[in-house]
Amino acid sequence: MKKIITTGIITAILISSGLALAFPEPAIVPAPADWTLNVRFENPQQIVLPGAIPQRFWYMILTITNETGKDVDFYPSCELMTDTFQRVPAIQGTSSVLFDRIKKRYQGRYPFLELLEDVGNKILQGQDNAKDVVVFWPDFDPNAKSFDIFISGLSNETAVVDDPVKKDEHGNPVKIYLRKTLDLTYSIVGDPKFRGRQKLKLENKQWVMR
Image (cartoon, rainbow, N blue to C red; front, top):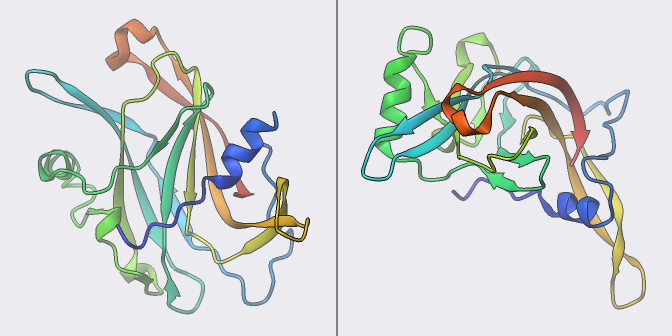
């Protein structure tokens, strides 16, 4: 999906340096040109596609509304990371069978539900142009006790930090470019032996630079 921008570099650096999830915070007072979209979300749910080998997925529904006063560019990225440091990018090219099942399940509440990858590169302003989108991840480490979902592309606020390890040819720190990112932290409740019965609890919602 050409509009997805990978932002996981800083994650690997923080993990390797023992600072996992210790991300910088956005500016307290945004710059005049900075904007942030409004987002509502349903907590992640599980779905299993039957077959000779059943496939388990997790999905999340987001409602994105542009109340910035202007049309804005939209280049989203969604990644799940467990407390066991497994990184799981959102699925691209989601199967029609998977999407159709979710769309049917929520047709009353979200009649215009779209795949995130099918949303255009512009979010028009106003409630009438709000987007209901679904994001999918394959099942992750069953031993995980919690995970974070990182959603970027909801803001144009950026920051530049020095890589704590890498140097350029002149011996100067390599620059890392970060985006304002929504970070949702969930704990997992229940026995992993009964995966389908496990429940999630939202522990924290915050904006970070990642």
